[in-house]
Image 1 (cartoon, rainbow, N blue to C red):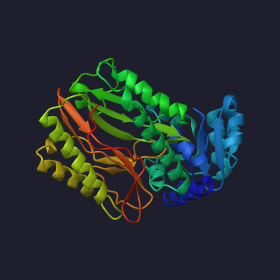
Image 2 (image 1 turned 135 degrees about the horizontal axis):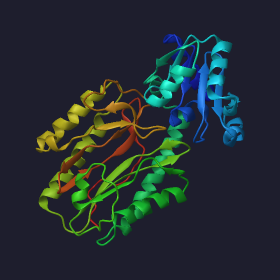
Image 3 (image 1 turned 180 degrees about the vertical axis):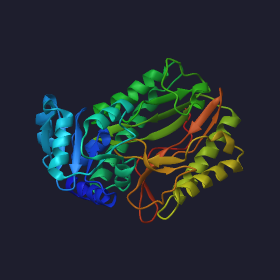
Length: 356
């Protein structure tokens, strides 16, 4: 698996006339090497792969990265890089310019000799867009853990419960059942807070008549899940029910339309047209969805500027939402695998309005 990814990367490097590339982004380091340590960079050439780390991670790197030559950072990071440049005759060295800070880039410019530094934004991201069988299995398991957490928390959502308590319950369930952590900060937003698409869980107590939006996920073997469900507590208004039904209708329609060959921006546009039928288009401010993998937001982007065409093996979210400032919001989100015939939902959980 890692060998195949390195081969794909080297083909990309050759097409960009790169003799080597430094990988600093943590999720890209993991994707290309299997290394899960919190520090350590990769330097990949057209015929050899190196991992540069400190004493804390030398044994871990040896165990997780059998295809890599390990270099101890105590030799000096720039001494190591310059040594590899000379050994492999690298004239153009790629760097992840969206990850590297200005300070680090300035230090690279001062200390790296004999090679031109070239920005490679999006190069690794383009490799990650189609998932292999192992990735799909890990993403499926991560989704299953999130679904289990949703079912487990329903009887704990009641008037007087705090948003942060519900978030803690979701996270505890996922960790207890095999997750290594959350894939992003858990959103539990009730009442007026539910109008904030990424409102964090607060001390606010849930009240009768509230919508409660829960957007959460976990990490499993380095892969993310992402699911959103909105539930109601006690009696809700006719307008709340109408908004929920509009979002539910739109989400179901879009699940039937997401398929190979569809352009992401066109898919996003259809979702807005559907919500426009209900008069809610202007209250849908984010993209319909995004890719999910080692990061919770990856390519492709199902948004107005999404230029990718959907292909089998892509994993994306489908998450329309409607938000009324200082009042309430509704979002329903599934993570799905694009197949030859449409999609397979990875997070099967009830979407009909649940009133607790």
